[in-house]
Each structure stands twice: as C-alpha cells, then as structure tokens.
Image (cartoon, rainbow, N blue to C red; front, top):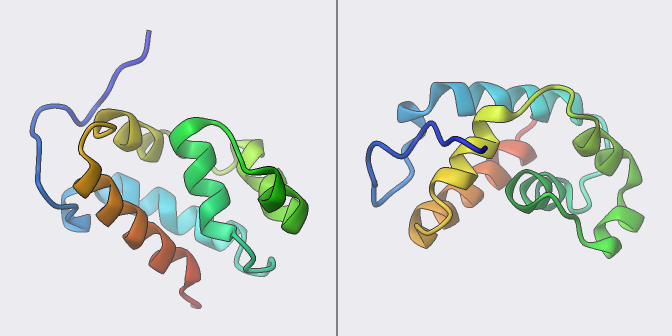
Length: 108
C-alpha cells in the first residue's frame, strides 16, 4: 500500500516554504552529486523519484548520477511522496520540477 503525506490540500502552486522536508532532501541530493557531471542530473532524479524509470540516453550520458539516484542514498521519501500526492496536479508538479532543476544546478 502506498500512502501520500501531502493530500490534505490541493495547492495551485508549489511553495518551497510549505515543504521543508522536501527541500531538505533535495539539498542532500544536490550535495551528493555536486561534483558529478551536469548532464541530465536533475532529469535523472526527477524521472526516478517520480516514475521509478530513467531514460536510457540519460543513463548512458551520466552513469554516476544514475548510480546515485538508484542507490537511495540519501533517502528521498518526502520527494517521492510529493510526486505521488500531486500526480494529477500538473501545474503544481511543473513548478516543483522547475524548482528541483534550479536547486540541483546551484553551486554552494
């Protein structure tokens, strides 16, 4: 059985301040791959965490990031739950994916 932690409301827009655990997990993911090649980095994580599949071209283009995404370390259960909870809310997910991509590309 799958359970969604974020179904209590149906927001129109993604607001990072409302999802601190998601933001925290995203930062840990960013740190884990900070020194790896940029090619499809965010796309690999989004695809895997959202649908549990990854485009073959992305796997070939960035095997290190793919291994990291598949490892489950660091855990990203809150990000997965967000994707599951808002699967039908396309606008929300688009905004979250844009936020995810921007966060993954930041250098600290």
